[in-house]
Length: 136
Image (cartoon, rainbow, N blue to C red; front, top):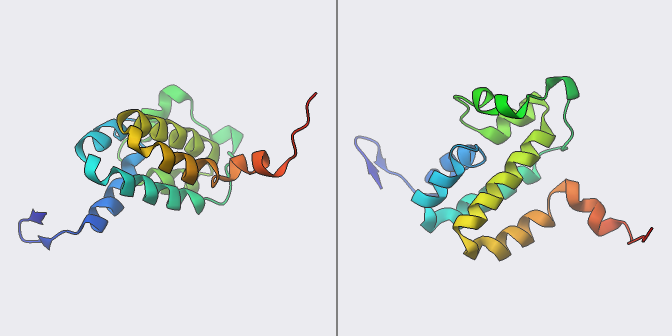
């Protein structure tokens, strides 16, 4: 890829820019459609960044209503960073699940990758692996 006056842009640089908006509900589908050849790299980078999120708890009084989400995310360049700074980990988890479902719908080849990387790595699902099964 070439941008006028900027020199060559690497695939890694493109992935680093796109992963910031991958979880944005308005951009997941266009990203997966336009950047299908590097979709796995985008998902991989998103998973790596989500692993760095300290917790998935949210501050109750600061959580926005679902219909406010698009307004809140206007102009946000990095969704993961924005939600972490706002202390809205649960909202971030919801956006991540939505984005991964949409990516999977557009790229079934990501099934094994998303399942193995996301389900077993996000802290919210640790209890599934640690607690023994207890029928009630």
